[in-house]
Amino acid sequence: MSFDRLLAHPGVEEVCELRSSFGMMAFHGGALEVMTDVIARTVAERAGASYYGVHQPSDLLWHLPSIEIDPAHSPALTAFLDHVDIVVTVHGYGRDGFWTTLLLGGGNRALADHLAGHLSAALPTYDVMTDLEQIPLPLRGLHADNPVNRPRQAGVQLELPPRARGAGRMWQDWKGPGLVPHTVAVIEALVAAVTSWPAATATG
Image (cartoon, rainbow, N blue to C red; front, side, top):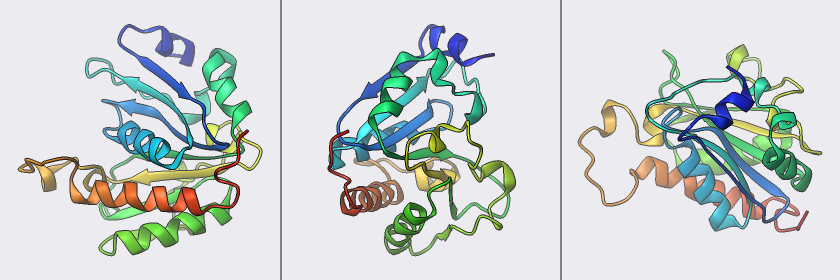
């Protein structure tokens, strides 16, 4: 599987919405890493940020490593990366020992600390991890070809466990209305972090 084949597959939706020079991404969105696109896109809309996402249908679920999400195969991704200065990529993960841990990898450590302050305040029952030595190696998001590091100021790879995304057994009886409280808290924290980041409202 390659990125160009994924984008050409029936049912896959590629979305690029250009606003400010701050970007939100969810290229493992749709049914693959559930709710990551909803979170990233909602934050982008509310914060006036740009958004890029790849949303997969429920009958597909192809997981490409982040370093294979190559702008050479996507004019939309190229336009997005040319437009933004800095990004937050939203991912979903699940790992024993980390069910209540948010991981903040990626190359921009100042932004990681900024996000961590907002997320920690909004989600006091979670651990928010920014120490790269403690983050599992495959989830650190430091490779130069990872889209999180391609913008001029790089960005943060935010890994959310299932319960923070409204998935898993914790929320199986949730009937709403709206998103589960933990997901709402994630969105609110990210909106506050994006809008308070210096130059977040500047156009690219």
